[in-house]
Structures are given as structure tokens and as C-alpha cells.
Amino acid sequence: MGEVAVIGAGLAGLTAARRLSQAGHRVTVFERDEAPGGLARTFDAGGEPLEVFYHHLFTSDTAYTRLAGELGLGDTISWLPSRMGMWTGGRLWDFGTPGSLLRFKPLTLGDKIRFALGTLRLQHTRRPDAFENITAAEWICAHEGHRVWETVWGPLFHQKFASEASNVAMVWLWGKLRLRGSSRSRSGMGERLGYMEGSFARLTNALVTAIEKAGGRLRLRTAVQRIDRDQNGFSIATGNGTERADNVILALQIPDYIRCAGHLLPTGERTRLLKLRATGALCTVLEMSHPLTQYYWLNIADRDLPFGGLIEHTNFIPPDRYGGRHILYISNYLLPDDPLLRAGKDEALALYLPALKAINPAFEPSWIEDAHHFRAAYAQPIVTTGYRSLIPPFRTPIAGMYLVSMAQIFPEDRGQNYAVVSGERVAAALLEDLASR
Image (cartoon, rainbow, N blue to C red; front, side, top):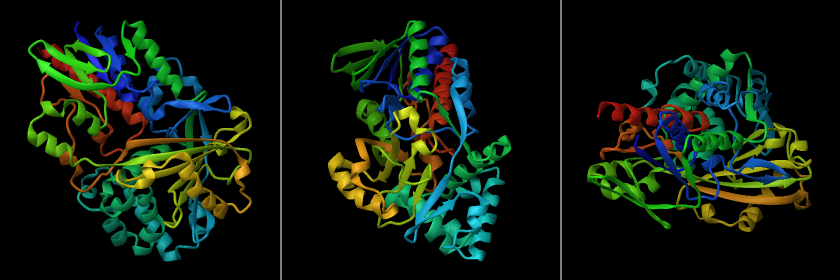
């Protein structure tokens, strides 16, 4: 069996490494951070591990739950009710259920009917083809009305895609409503979401343990600087020296892939890859003595506020898990050139605190017992019209070199479940190629 290098210890990379280890291959996983997990890595919050970026599961996330069961963690996932709200017009509204839609005064009765009919149409359309070459703004305005776009969908798209919101293809929203919403309804569990006791790091750690038991290695704090190919395989240059592998899986986001291996690719392939853009994520996590709202997920439909969403984790998971502290994620998705993406914690908090007080006038900065600040330069692919034609395959133009990235997840949206799916698919592609040689 040959040596396989996996570059990146996020969930896709670790899943691929697990499957290759099971098949008898010697695997080395390289990770530049001090801990595995990628966007699901954790920090300590009130004595409990917590994800640096908010995470939960949908009942349709069967690949993740299957892997958790395989690793002995199936019983650690709890499925709990959650409550969604929206801030618009200077006040909080319940949102996300038929009853809350009826009470949502920013829309007229006619708007609400069109909104509901549009949602049903999306959930019952099985194929994404009709939504791939039209923007969400165009489709929503045509089928649900301009006011529905400006009041509901437009602000939500702005949360994820910043100034690119009006250029995002309708297929992205179809994926949200069809592939997740419909499966949740079939489950009979309504709007319940899943969370793993002790954080999702438990699955990450279980994957690492399984890989190491099979003879694999995890090299933390080892950034890969360059990958080269010769007749004997691949050389992998890191700050600690150079290692060899017969095959390489790059479990990286597109800019890191280009940085490490772009020189190996044909010019046309590099040009195509550069068209795959994404927003970055800025997440400030507050540990507080009081809750801010009663909602788990609060959509901010007011562009005057300096963030796109508030995710109050302890309105989903009880605060006693975190030493009695209330956990609030302040979420922002920003284009790479937005200065806020590079802001430090104190600068961001100075911008955010007045807005938190606007949402809850009782809020005081003294409620904050600790604050943490995280950023990811590449967090949400910008799914434009014609996106399918830009997606790179798992098999790169270089024999023996494979790519797995969130940019390849389509028409679904990125998430832990589809990281598992992608990791299994890229491993299967490599194993299939080895079997045919």
C-alpha cells in the first residue's frame, strides 16, 4: 500500500484519511493549526469545549450521523427544538413557522401568501436545473414580490454574501429549502436541530484516534508551503522540511490550493479556479451573565446594524453546560476587502455593543464575562449563475493529486454533513484510480 498525504485536518480531510486508512493505506495528515477540526475546531467556554463558529445538524444530515454512529458517538447527538426570530423595523419578530408568518406585519397578507406558495414550490421541485441560471433576486421578485425580497430574503442573502447578494443564484436558496427543509418535515421532528454532547470536536477527535490506530499520523502546526510532482511521486515542503507521498489529497479552500499547488496546474484551470469567490466569516463570541434574546437564531434584516446574525447558543443548549454563562455568537460574512474582516476584537466590540443595546435596551457591557474573536478568510462560496461549470472535480489535472473543498459542494450548501460526503467521495475516487492502475 502506498503513502497518502492529506493536506488539511478539517472534517473532509479527516474523513478521507479515515476511509483510506481503513483500506490499508499509510496516511499522513498535515494541519497548519494547533488543533484539527477546521471551521469546527473549539475553544474553552465556561469549562466546556465550544465551536469557534456556530454549528448544528439538520435531521437530513444523515452522512454525519452515520459516521458518528460508526465511531460510537451516535447516542451523543441530541435533537432539540430551536426558535428563530427576525429583527426588522426596529423590533423583534418570531419567524420560521406558519403561525409566525401570519403575525409578521412587515408583509401584507398578499405578500405572505406569495411567500408561502413560493416556499412550497421550492420544497416540492426536485431538480435544481430551473434555478441555476437565474439570480435569487430575480426569481423572488418575479414569484413572491419585490417587498418579500427587500424585507425577508434580500437581508438574509446580504448576511451571507454581503454586496454580492443580488448576484447569487436561486439554486442556493432552493438547496436550503428543498434539501434541508423538506427532509426535516419528513422526519416528523419539525424544526429540531442536532448538537453533540461535548461539542462536535468529539467526532473530530474520534476520527484522529481511528486514523492513528490504523497507523496514520497527524502533523499539527505543520503548514504545507508547496507541493511538487516528479516521476517518483510528490514532495511536500513544510516549514519543518520535505516529505514524500505517492498520492496527495488537498483538503483545502481554493486560495490555499492555488498557493500550494497552483504552479502544477494548466493556466486554464487556474483561471477557472480564480472565478470561485467566497465571503469570509468574522465571529465574535460573548460569554455573558444574561441572555440577550429568547431566540437561538436571530436574523438581522436591518443593514444599519453592523452584523448579519445573532446566534444565541444557550437558547438551544442549556447554559449550565457552560458554567451558567450565556453564549452569543455575533456573525458577519464579509468580502475579503472589507476592513471589518481584519478588525481586532476590541474594534469589533466597539462597533457591536450599541447595536446589541438597540436590540435589547436592558443590555449592559458589564454582562460580558469573556469575549473571543475568530475569522476565516474563506467561509461561504458565492454561488453565482452558471456555478456548476466552475466546480473543479475531485481528480485534478495532475495524476495522483486530488482536491476536496467546500467550493465543490453543490447544489447543497456547505456544512459538516457535506464535508463528510465530500471526504468519502474524494477517498473513493483515489481508491478507484489505484485499483485501475
